Image (cartoon, rainbow, N blue to C red; front, side):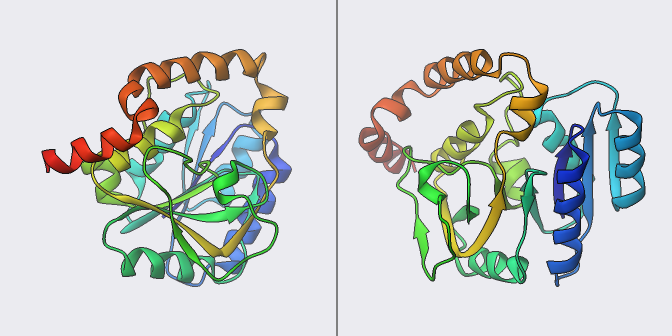
Length: 237
């Protein structure tokens, strides 16, 4: 199940959908959650998705994806920003990595805009394991097992404001549960970056600072003492 969120910026959503339709070879469904766009965008979303939810007001990043996951019927869910474009065979390569690594909670492709851990400008050959509780990848495109996302990791936390913090929280939840985060360098996603936050959110930097403080408070021990956190979690298990 491929899930994305829409909040106007229709040209980006169109390019995203085109890349998914052209470059996905495995059986799939496309789910678009619209977070309060203008009527023209909402009509397009309904007409060009396999399933959709249309909200009249922005429900935020986490709730949007959580609602999309509730609709999803696939074994795997690819949750991606709408300002991305996917290359050929992306689905085969990422699901192959997930299936070969039962301990993987998230498989992320590399992307052209985002945090440095998965920032690349050309595809590579390696699959890298991210050190727990440190440099998590941006949630540009996360492939996860649907049942694990819901039942093991608890879905996306909805306690953060719209702008940020949700991806960090999910990554830390995956690590806390004893799973790995892998970066598959074979799949390069074209990502514009900051399209929605810069064009649609007023003072998104203030939201970012607020969410960052909230995240550090919630994950204080794991964020500031990652080595001790890893040892502690191993003893618990």
